[in-house]
Length: 627
Image 1 (tube, rainbow, N blue to C red):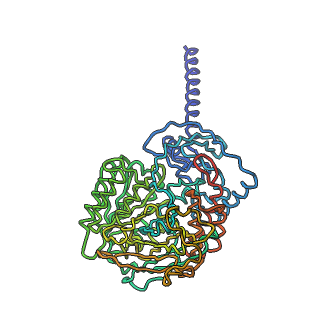
Image 2 (image 1 turned 180 degrees about the vertical axis):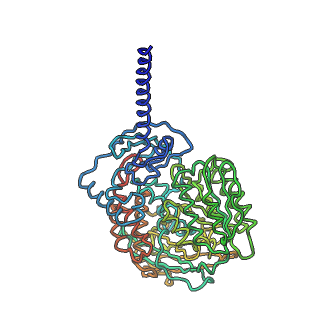
Image 3 (image 1 turned 120 degrees about the vertical axis):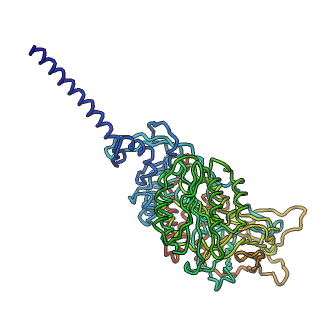
């Protein structure tokens, strides 16, 4: 009996040891995966979620793919191979890395992306849709789920062509004060990627920066018109015609009360930290800027739309902040329903003096109800007649719908911005809040007539999506861009003088020959290159006002350094776009020109641009080819 009891005791003890060993092994495995990327997680489930989102959440991971995964769609986890990249000469690679490291150290925004470590941006970017092997601090490999297909959409527009003055002497376009394209391009370059050429709108790159233009004296003449002519940096045989507008500056305290409806996308696609969490921070910043007599309401939409916060005065700021902090994401994206609800609420907030604006914050991924750019454009166009404007803040990557957001902002008489960092949120919603919410001129159009006696050819740099017909200029029923208080608007034309060796287009056989150099024009216009006309309406008025300015070779109303900095930005934009008018001019040339003309840079935006130029030397396309 004692012998049998002993046997049972030994067998039970051994079984217990085996069970403890199995439990210990299981716990060890789970603890190992819960320390991915050096960041301990609370649960094993959280660690799996972390592996799916680590690339987007942790900017210090050098092998990030840069495209956030959609947390609402499962994907199989696979072990990845490091993609092959084209060989780089050692000297060139070393120089590129030095330029990238210099960019990281010089600029706080770039450090925000890279983690601030030298060399942090010299690692090659992963092609979109590829999976890379991430390493734990121990050196053990960790497999990361592959990216979902990239569904980002951008407006399709061919670059403006070169035009012969004799055949087509007039150019007409609407002004544009949006800056979304520049911020998007920055987010690509700091992650080691060359942006999609369709994402590049050169006018938005140029207009991201303020320029030293003359300031108007009063709101009765809401902006100044400034023109200069200089030699083109990339072609000594052509000229740059620089047109600059500067809006009248209105102190925030002098603005009438503002009624703002925050229309916030809380769908599942907004779960990533560069989307809804960054959006919440951005709106909290905006609250810090607004005044106690301003009013805020919040409408949210996912599978359906609803009012989260009824109109609330900023005097009760804590209530508004509490509503913003309560936002969570999930579900589909009923953007059309959200817009309808926002306009309905905004109409109840309109008053005699107060201005009412909807601020839509989204990644643009509408998939319930009306969703095409044309359908939404028509809906917003019908609503703008009520005096309610619509501005759009874009967030995130992967399913970013720039095409739709541009259509909404342009037809809602608002502005479009892309928020990729908290610093950009501060720029748009704090530093430039007056420009964003106060309109001083509406339906602003520019028309330039070139003199065939002095100019053979011309091309407008950028503004492809803002082109107007010649007859639209005098038609006050045709909508155009608005200018906010303090805004600057810049446009550049490259013009080829008559007789220049840079002329590309031959005269037609059956047309009268173009004037040769020295041919006489009418005496009163003989020294003119062009005639610049501008039309605008004061807010609420139906009839436009005309301003006109003749331009000669000696016209120089803009400091040359300002023109040359704008030219550096325009040249770089053309390189990104892939235009063929730059000859052998490179990003290094753009960097040299921009460095020499940084000028007054109180917010460090121009110096940040220098960093982007340096980073472009190691940027790659999605196929792994170097820029």
